[in-house]
Image 1 (cartoon, one colour):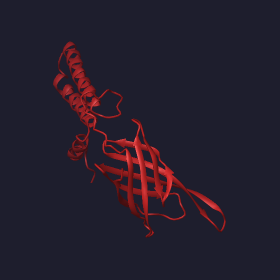
Image 2 (cartoon, rainbow, N blue to C red; image 1 turned 180 degrees about the horizontal axis):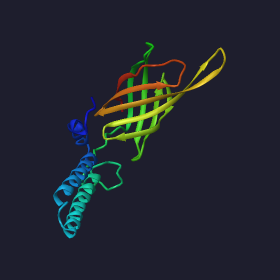
Image 3 (cartoon, helix red, strand yellow; image 1 turned 30 degrees about the vertical axis):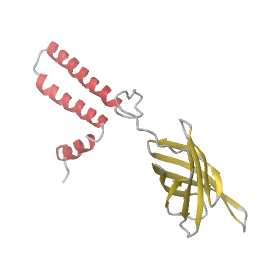
Image 4 (tube, one colour; image 1 turned 90 degrees about the horizontal axis):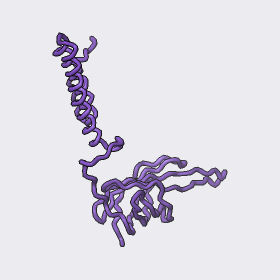
Length: 195
């Protein structure tokens, strides 16, 4: 038995209510239906006047909704920006990797206003940080290493993805590595500010 659009309506409304643009779309649909039924017998002049009023109202709501959506291209004057966490300095962590070895890793990090820069050690060796981002108290960056199998000198590039949540002098990190000869499960560890 096929379900009709009316049976899906509660789920559609629930999903649309999760974003300002979803609400905007629901308003356009609702006003179109109401306008059709309320003004189908009205004079042409009344229908045009009501169309203009409905259009202005929906457009005004659309502009307001777009201001609330990051990345929409409209200035977000009304939305406060989240304060950025202070990540500058040296951080250290005892990292137990998924194969069982534990290494003391050191992170020298700073934020230049556009990206996270610095180094992060992997198995005790310093690696440059790339693609670093800081949004509020969330930090992410990658480092790269190379793996070689000695039997045939085949080299593979490995990318290490670090994501973390900064809480004062502590960063709760998750490390995911991809591209090597073996698969690794994500590793969680805490880095503490050492200076």
